[in-house]
Image (cartoon, rainbow, N blue to C red; front, side, top):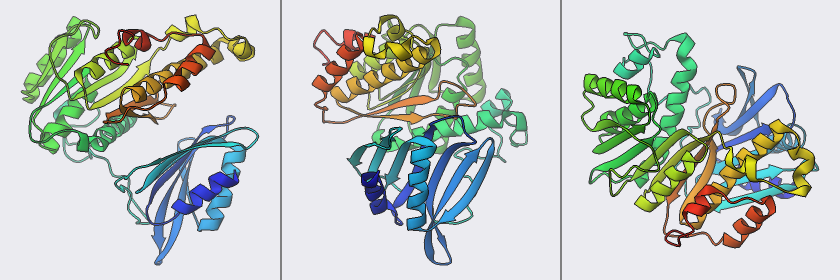
Length: 383
């Protein structure tokens, strides 16, 4: 814990963007804590926002006081800490006994949060201006006001667009950008992505939404005609067999069921996609494979087995992506109270492949599994 406090202390300055403390040790009133620097009467302080139920409680601390609070939170309430500053990112997991596992990446980040004390939540899409697809979805009124009962959906859309905003430096502006949304469903996030990139940011984009349901595809194509979204089209088909393009810049897959996520990632990597955004769903595959005597005391409980297998599935996917040259993060997509499928895999293509093959194989062998994504890459063309 002292090492973690020392690392955090170095980042408690005006270059800190945020700290998020999450992953409760037990069911507690406090669901999450978010910390950001603020200026109060020309003095640098740190505002901690605790999410309690549906309320947010704000408290301001000095540097030393905050460090003590963080130590208490990590020992008693939470297991996970993420810190982002302009110069690096820090991810820490703290065990029940207080042992901290710390992962540091030295990389530049653009600071997003201002030091203003009283800061109104700024959304990428704001209320007051009606947007056709949000009105049709029932999220907005015809006057542009957010419908109270749909506020969670409004937050989810904006949270998704924040992920898109983060990856803009990896999308070219000098040519057409091709984006595929596998398993697009009713496509409210596809429409949001198109509106943001094309209308708000001026990108030349070609967006393809793909889904198995014929009636859904027909409905979405009717909507895109109504909105005048000329470079957005929806096609019926499955992820595995889709061959409609030769190169793709970004692949999005939200709630693709079970191994459909693996086929989407495989397609993205083979296309050389610069960006992959994936929210996996229904990770059943490893549940039927995993055999490990050491884990049996917890794996005998169905719910724990299901959750453990889901986490292991996404962890192995992330490791495989690192292995083939993608800088990979697993991020919180939306609060658990809105959907249990709340993890997003964000992978950015780099020129550097991680040397983690042996580490990956040890984990895979320990769990006694063979993930679909690894099997898809066994021909030697990828790994």
